[in-house]
Length: 174
Image (cartoon, rainbow, N blue to C red):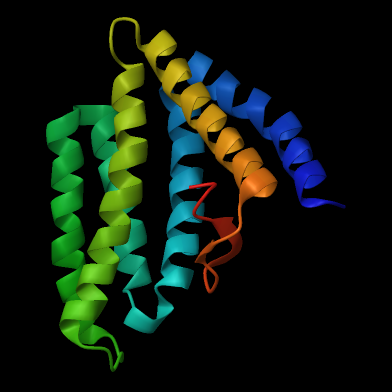
C-alpha cells in the first residue's frame, strides 16, 4: 500500500473518531487525548532514546497534566507539569540509567511539556463558551496544514529535513 493510500485509510477511520470526540467533549475527548498523549510520548521517547528519558515519569506527568486540565483548569494542568520535574528527579535517583542527569531529566520534561501542554490546551479550548467550534477549527487547521505540508514535500521536496528521524521529510514540505 502506498504512503498516500495508507494516510487516506487512517483519515477515513480517524477523522470521524476525533471529530466526534471533539463534538461530544467531556470524558470522550479526555479519553482520546490521553490515548494520543501516551502514543505521542512513546514516539518522542523512542526518538530521544540516546538521552535515556525517564519514560514512566513522563507518562505519569502527562496524564496528570491532562487530568488537571479536565478537572481543574490551567492551574492544575501546570501543577501536573511541575510534577514532571519532581517525578523525573525521583525516577532518576532510582533508575539504573548511565545517562547524565541533565540529559535524562530534560528529555523527560521536554516531551511531557511539548505533548502534554498541546493536548491539554485542546481540552481547555473545548471548555470555552464556543469551545466546540474553536476546538474543531484548531483540529481541522492542523490537519489541513499537515496535509498541505505532505503534498508540497512530495511534489517539490528535494532537501532532506532529518533523515535519521523521518527519512522522507523535506525542508520544502516543512
